[in-house]
Image (cartoon, rainbow, N blue to C red):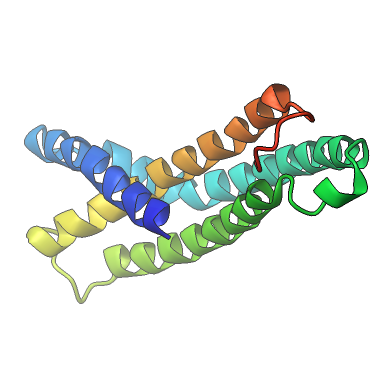
Length: 155
């Protein structure tokens, strides 16, 4: 859970300079681009992550089957748990993005001011968070490459 908060904060911290630059140059290119494409990008990344995770889990199953019976339930438990969390996080990102876009498009909110800047940061943060999520999934490949069946380390 702490990693999720760290990634959320990291995403927002990375998004603030983009929002600042965008507002300094009086453009909405990034937020307009993401407004038109973010949901599709997130769904595509979810599909990529799911496919990658399927391949990783298949290889993990092969590795687990080579282990002695008593070690099978312990190995890769954390990896499987994190992969499940990754899918849930991605689905939440899609939902959060839709809510942010509803607020951004609402005539009830001004298109200026701190709240609007926070919404712009939220849009960019959703994209950045999805990239962090993708990076975490790629790390699963390296866990498999580094796996040593003789080691007692639980992955």
